[in-house]
Length: 463
Image 1 (tube, rainbow, N blue to C red):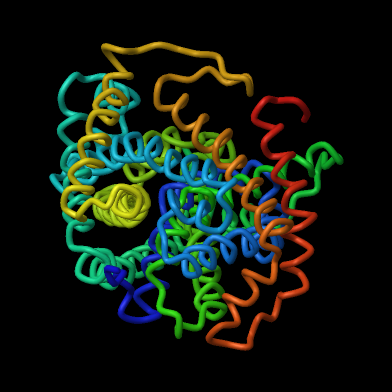
Image 2: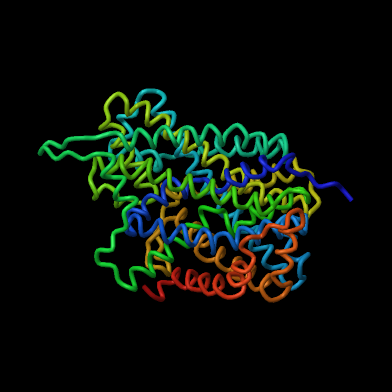
């Protein structure tokens, strides 16, 4: 039997897992939701869910990986043959996500090059983003570069690729986030009408709870938004944490590592809010915070950097460098979930499995890029939104398949193999499982209900 690769140390695992968690969702989705859902109220709900709901699913997936020493495609079947289909879905999710994640990574690369070359002011133009994504060739070119970087890291394997890249990239990413966050809080701007806004005022929007107009329905929306964000933020239900868990040594303190991943990810998410919300508020007011997704990162923020003058050119370059690092570590983990599955299920060598997934992702990514021009279409989804190809893929993977994978995982662990299977795995190298009682209640009762509600939300069946 071939010996499975493993992380050399706990730090390597924590940084790799945290790198996966700290991605585009933290940087563009978290700040928008925080601003939309009452600032401090959203943060409080998010923190509570992270320590309960998110912790439960994160612990479960990592424990499944280490227990089986298998990738997501084969791990579920090894635990119970009737749940092999869950492994297929858990592998399908990252296969769907990888193409459009690479396309967005290509967008980030384009903006980084624009700011480094001194043309940041051009990126602030309303037509810049639209002209770029609708062009025939350039988005494909930047997407291929981003995908190539991911494949290069994956080819290096667990130690020389993923772990080594994480040890270099993550500290740089954290430093850049802190620098930009400090700058964002300390700036101020006076409008033409004399209105002065400061970064500290923007910080209050983020951290002080806003109960104005709060109803039970609105609170339910906040809870579901926070729960949905946790999927993006913790890389849950994508097969990633199962794959990374399979590389963790049996003598590693799993409970301690999971706590560190949780702290790291939540801290970066909060810092992302500090980094973005005050800056956007200072130069664009509260109305500037209404843009979500690409609108926030690729339209609103370049305008903010342009309003900063010459220093905005530097801050913009630092920001998109940081975003590129975050996107790269997440994309690598998404790709690894698929590559490891190909290796385990079909007994392929890493080089051949990487090449296969690269080709699949490349074809999908090209279609995503062309979805903004030659293959443009609009489709109304069950949740009421009208989306192009990228949005449709995102909806299928994140709003349909991921909740199904997590619901099935809760049933498998809660009622088939029983919670003790995960508890014993966590306590294998440490007697510490401080949230053991909470874990049992969450995995058997609370998490499945919350997941079903989240799944129903994707069909706009309530709220």
